[in-house]
Image (cartoon, rainbow, N blue to C red; front, side, top):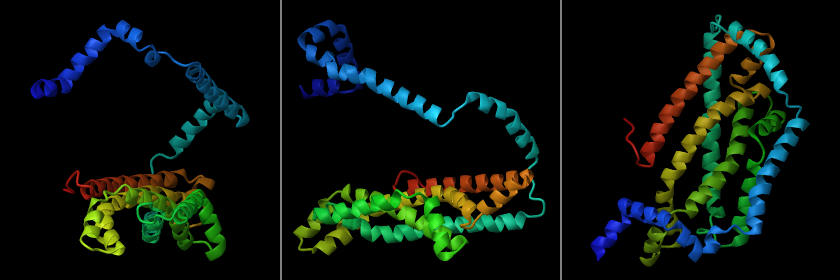
Length: 298
């Protein structure tokens, strides 16, 4: 009996059941008409939702002056820009660009690290399985939502007015933006952690602090480390953008070089950024896979 059940429950068994269901489709419809019949509400939703999406998209295109003709007319200009960017050349500014790229990496690293260190303890206040008080974790989560709703570029403009131009403003902007995102992700990871270890510690007489320290933290650290590494990848690109408003890094060079049409230097700088991001993505991916136990580093 159990052998026949396991056989029918396997992939081939599921295939036979599926074939039998298709063969008796008319009978299934007759016996269970409610499972095959769309209600008037569902039928209306199937029709109205796509129409609403199309209408909103069309309205947005009209409001934003979307024009295929302008795109086609601009392709020749884009081609001329591409020709002027070849071949990429630093024109004697390689070490200047290299220093600016290092500054960009420093902004991304310090911003990500600062945000992670600040968000980690606060995330426990937003986790329901750590703080049962609904007002505490609800208020903490809403604070995270408010902070992460402000884009990194806006934070950069705010901090430039506070501490002045330069990479320090970029680090603070990235830390503020990522603090809200990390807080949300960390708290969700803490809530998703298996509570059996904490229950065992509690059964052996451990305090609430011991349950968190030895039950929750070891289980959640690999997930948090993986998330931090992923954000470091994305922040490397974001640090390039915030430099445009004066928050340090290569962004300021990109802005000035594009403005004066030094397109060969622009192409070289973009190439440096692409190579750097590709290397960081490769290393970070390997580290993240190794941390969560799916793959060796080498």
